[in-house]
Image (cartoon, rainbow, N blue to C red; front, side, top):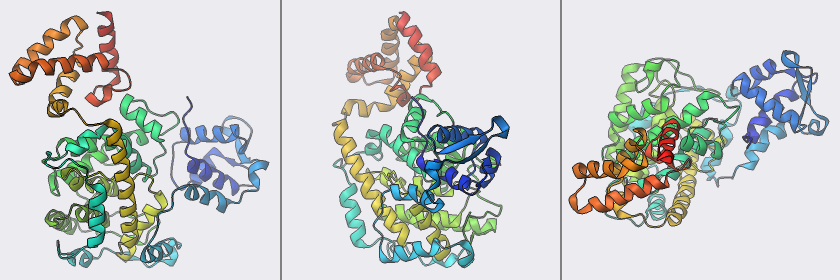
Amino acid sequence: MANQIPDDALYAIEEVVHRYPGGASAQEILRALAVPIPLRTLQYRLKSLVTRNRLIMDGEGRWARYRISHAAAAVRPADLAARAEAEEPAIPLSEAGTSIRHYVQREPEARKPVGYDRKFLDRYRPNVSFYLTEQDRTHLAAVGRPQIAGQPAGTYAKQILNRLLIDLAWNSSRLEGNTYSLLDTKRLIELGEEAEGRAHLEAQMILNHKDAIEFLVSAADEIGFNRYTILNLHALLANNLLADPTAAGRLRYIAVGIERSTFHPLEVPQLIEECLDQILATAAAIADPFEQAFFIMVQLPYLQPFDDVNKRVSRLAANIPLIRGNLSPLSFADVPRRTYTDAVLGVYELTKIDLLKDVFIWAYERSAARYVAVRQSLGEPDPFRLRYRTQLREIIAGLVRAPVGRKDTAARIAAWSSAAIDPADRQQFNHVVETELASLHEGNFARYQIRPSEFAAWREVWGAA
C-alpha cells in the first residue's frame, strides 16, 4: 500500500513552485522550502504531485523543471498556505489567547526583540501562584481521573501503553514538523518498518519518543521533577538527532536561536543550570498534578536548557504527574501545529501563558475522552497479567530471542517460573506464557520489545517443531 503524504507537505511545495512561472528545479524548490527535507523525499513528493496533475514536469533527470498545472494555477499561494491550517480543528480561544496569537503572527520585524526574563520564573510561588484557575483544575480532574483508585503509580498508563506509545509519539513528533502519518507511526513502532520516501531522522524522532514514553511508564514510581528524569528524558528524545552527540542529556553551554522568533534565550551556562534547578524544585513542590504539568510546559521551553529538543522534553515531562497519579495522559491529539507554535511563541516573546493554556485545556479534554474510549474497548485488564507484566515480558522475550522451539517450550517455562514465581501462581503463570506464545504474530510482538529479525527467526523455529 502506498504511503500517504501529508497534504500540508504537498501544499508547501506547490506554494514554492507558484513563485517560479517558468518552472523550478528540484534544487531550487529544496532551497526555498521553509522546513528542510532530504532530496529523495522531495523527489518522491514531486512525483506524487505530477501523478495527481497538480504539477507538470518538463525535462528528465537533473534537468527536470516543475511548474503549476492549469488545474492548479487558479489557486492563489495564500490559499495553498491556508489549506492545511483550515483542515485542522479550531481550538476555542480566550480573548487573551486571541490577542497573543494576533501579535505573534506578525512578521518578526514587526515584533519586539526580547531576552530571557528571570522574574517570570521568580514570581511563581508553588501552591500560592497558579497558572490554572481553581475551576480549570477541578474541571481537568473531573475529565481525567479514571476509576482505578488505590492502584500503584503508572497502572493506568500501563493498561493503555500500546495506544499511548503510538498516539503520543505521533502527535508530539507531528508538532515538530514530522510528516509520518498515524499509520506510518504504527507500523514503525509495532513492526520496525520505516515509511518510504521519508527522512531517516523522522523515524529516529518517533522511535526516540517510544523509548522515552516507555521509560516514563516503566519507572513511574521513580520519575519526578528532578535531574535524573529530565536529563535522561532529553537523552532518549535527542538520541542520534543532535549535531553534537555528547549534547544528549547535557545542559546547554552554547547560544541558540528560535526560528522566526524575536526571543533570545539565556546564554550563560551557570545561569541556565541555576534556573533549571529552580524550575525543577518549583515543579516538584506543586501539589496539583495539572498545574505541575502546565507549569513545566511553560517554563522548560522558555529556558531552553538544552541545545535542541526542549519542547519535546516539556511535552513528555508534562505527563510525569499524570502517569504517577494514574490520570489520563496528555497525547496532544489533534492539536494544530500552528496554534501550538503560536502559543509557545507567546510565552517566549510576551511571557504570557493564555494561548498555551487554551491549547493545554482543549488538548487534555481531547486526550482524556480518547482514553476513556480506549479503556472501554480494552475491557477490564486481567489482574494476574497486570501483576506479572514484567515477568511475562522477560520470559516471552527470552524464549523468542533464544529462539526456543515448540517442543522445548514447556520445560523452559517450568524451569524459569520455579525460580521466579510464587508457587501458588506457577501453574497459572505457565499457562499464560504458553497462551501468549501461541498468540504471537507480526502485529503484536513489539509489546515484548522483540525486534522483527528476532521474531522472524523464532517463527521459523516454532513453525518447524
